Image 1 (cartoon, one colour):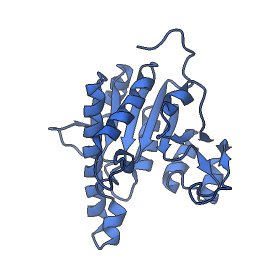
Image 2 (cartoon, one colour):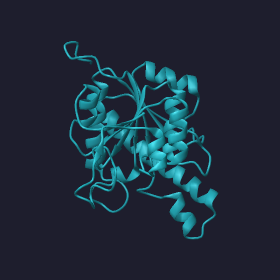
Image 3 (cartoon, helix red, strand yellow):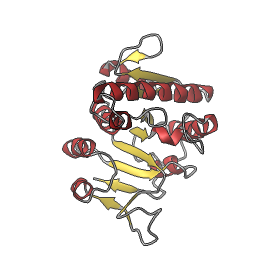
Image 4 (tube, helix red, strand yellow):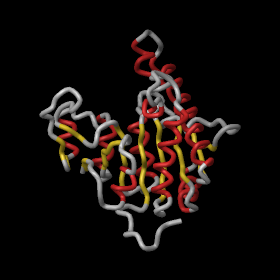
Length: 242
């Protein structure tokens, strides 16, 4: 339940985009259940604020289409395999959220009715209105599009107010803060600067789609406990792409 004494969250409906690698924890591959549960707890704290949440999770912890293509696989086939990996991650997150009492729906762009719902926009919107967390899986259903682009597309279709991109660092820097001590974090940065300076927030197609629809992107650290909730409460450290 939302806390009536707390200030209203800065956004009422958001898209949370995380990479498949975020679910690995310290493992080099696959899913780390304690890490999945920790992220689910972060989502629950925001859900408890009354915020409507949809999610897109990458599949790179299991299979990445570009890497498969680079190793000689046909690109379209490799991308479809990557989409199936995102369904596996979505089901894992659904299990963790529902263990916390959060009603969750996995909606796949590739129909597989035995394990999740097919994508129907109006049905997905209705799930959000009923305060269910909606996890969009299988990307856009098309090869050659990343899950970043899928997240931006679905965020626009769901009339989200912002995309939250959870990463390992607390925002967008002018250079890699892991490698360079003098890296400078931006409080805000324009879509055009992200593209021109190759800042690596999302791929170019996703940034262009966000720019065309005035969809802000909030880049924050998923490793910071309470960071997701803090930003929605008007606090925390992050970069806003707008």
